[in-house]
Length: 528
Image (cartoon, rainbow, N blue to C red; front, side, top):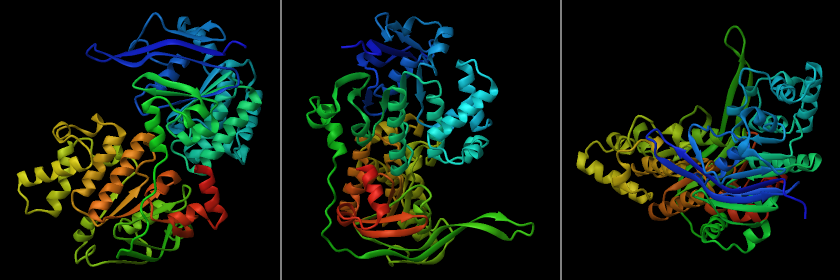
């Protein structure tokens, strides 16, 4: 057998905080990567996946980290841990390259896309500006960027999320690296775009003969792309093996729990309940161009005659690609956006005043870090709505109500009350956001991609929590998502949206077992 292209031996990474205390991010981890192989690293946030990747790239600040002398990272039998920064410059981006999770944070917003791709070529190759520009154009075409000449002169913000990720991939493969590290490259993308990016990575791997280290919390993607899988927990590789062995015969309890979360059961479907809200022929138009007199000359139809209904104790999932109108529909139902059409509500939802409606229809957003006030403690965040909608309650009664709802969402009350949002993990912040909405006892909750940025085990916890809350309170959910696995586990009804129109509706069982439209079939095939 030939030597592995990468051999990581006893990797230990300990960070030093401001007080001089040590925190072990990666502990005694060893693995190999063979030429042309795809090795996936999976595990929840904080397990050490990205730190391992950054160590391989030599991108961890030496002033803030302490390596053990036993550490060894051999690339083609060359010891990387002993390289100077100048020697690293020849390796990084040239022989070992990396695609980061959020391209908007990695691309320079002030430099055109073509220039950024050409720049990385010129850093490592002695070529003229003209040749670098021609090579950049070729790479953008190779990764599937349409209207290449026009896109070469575009800034990153003028591209979609999928296009920006393709640009990052073009930059990563520009110099034909021998190892490509992809760190959560599809997390924020729709399922169909995820599939396209995955297919592109496999195509480029084949074309350039690269080895790929694929970091992800999405086990569905891992199962499709990987030859071998490393399972990390709390900085330790607890299990590694072929993709078949890991998925079909896991040994470690943590691996089993990951797969259990991955294979969630559907909700009970066979019950009748009363209607709480009905939307009839909703339409929303966004103006994108006006003349000198302020008259709209060009607009986008975000919703076109959309009709849906929400029932007590049931979940309506709305699925579709970005730009399909899912969030716009949710904002209309929450009365947070102007629309044409009609929304009817049961008396128990909308009694007389706008305040009644606000109490009974709550929204949980995709990113709790941006929707929670960073200057307020958990107690202040959760109690804010109580003070508005239950003004008769005394301080001690408000506190008891806050503690109860935090316990209901699985947070230890005494430990979290006086902490701020930044002190929690993504899953914990989402629990706080759910508690904030739940505490005022709404009849309807609109959940806009509530699990898209979470690890598979945390996703499972949040979905299980939402199902438990629904069973005990009879709350109705509008569940907006592009994650068909999450939809399958929580939804009673599904509405499939494309370009502002509902193209198919039905029970979750019917949609998943016998989708009638080509678009619905593509969504399901891309994600399951």
